[in-house]
Image 1 (cartoon, one colour):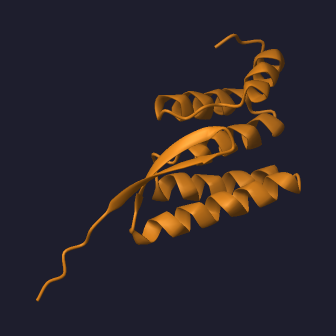
Image 2 (cartoon, one colour):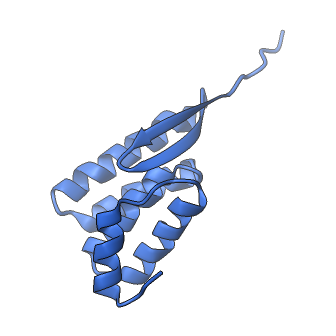
Image 3 (cartoon, helix red, strand yellow):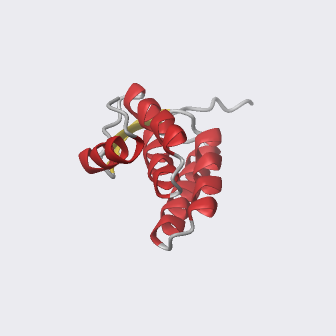
Length: 114
């Protein structure tokens, strides 16, 4: 007898962003683990490692706005402002909230008013 897979949607509010993720899929815990590891790398100033893990989180769960927000922070600290803006806009497009301080600092550093 075949077992029908069920997916539940949950809303996660963290780090100033709101993420809606399918719950019950194997990739959910994996994407969250990569996001958490990316944040740990950020706290240690390891921006390239953070970007790698956050990118994996996004590949596993493309609608995970927290991962886009956190990768924007990593790109900002790595002085790659164009990529930071891309992730900021994607976080917002997904319905996430971008921390006002990140927006202000990114506007000042990049000279852009987006």
